[in-house]
Amino acid sequence: MNPGTLSHRKRVLVIGAGGLVGLNFTRDFGEHFEIVGAGRVETESLEDLMAGQYDALVFLAQSSTYRQTPFQADLLNVNVGLVREVLERSVGRIPRIILFSSGSVYRASDRALDEDAPLDDQTDNPYVITKIASEMIARSFASYFDSVTIIRPFFIFGKEQRPEMLISRVAGKIRRGEPIEIGCDGGLAFNPIYVKDTSRAIANLISDAPAGLSYRNLFGPETLRFEDVVSLLSSAMGTPAKLRHTGDPLKTIIGASLHDLPEWAYGLNQALVETTGIAESCQFTQSPGRIQKSPLEGTPA
Image (cartoon, rainbow, N blue to C red):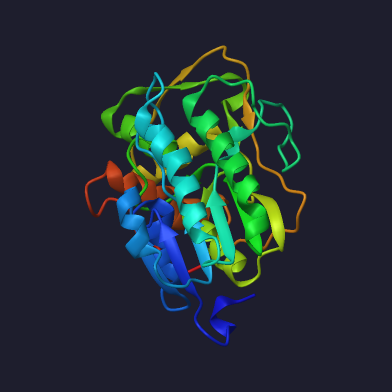
């Protein structure tokens, strides 16, 4: 359903509105929905924030310590504790829940991963542990809501992406002339999704979510090798990349789905990647003006 055709503007609470997805969703769909956005909120702030009625809750909050080891308290507090607290306070107030998890919850496989693929429940990775735990919490609350949709995204990228994220890190290495290691057969095979398509997926679920508990993988329309992404970034930045080929075995993290997916507005062919997608990540590592902007940039998906 097109959110613009709704008879009334749905009221949506977004927890984690200051991150990559939250910023883009609020900007792209602020005219279609009445969005109440909050960053990472503390427990004592939730009572006032959730005092009113909402049509949907979108939980995007993410601990900034997700890459740190050993297990950080903030990771547990945000990715697990805050999820439980928000869901508890949503009972009887918000009928529709959209919780962002991660495609990293799946067990490693050389095959594409659909929603029935086994979870990596034996991992010692703190981030993955908390994401699986948050899904279990959401499942335990599902009977209290009309709809609970757990989203497992694969490599979201785009403008406002944090510098430590994969594509931004690669752009930084290209700019600084640092070597980039590439494994066998072009390295990691993956299908990243552009953030504006992620925003559109959220809008679709707010407007027309499946009843009960469901899981949805979120991934881009084209599978790339890591070396392809490095080449696209290098071309977009006008700076050659220094590659160091290793003997590391090919790794695949490819999303798939058991469900029909919409046709995304932004494909990952080279022209669109350079003008509307991956090139935007270079803005963290490029001086202004180096990248030619496409007329499509900034257009709501």
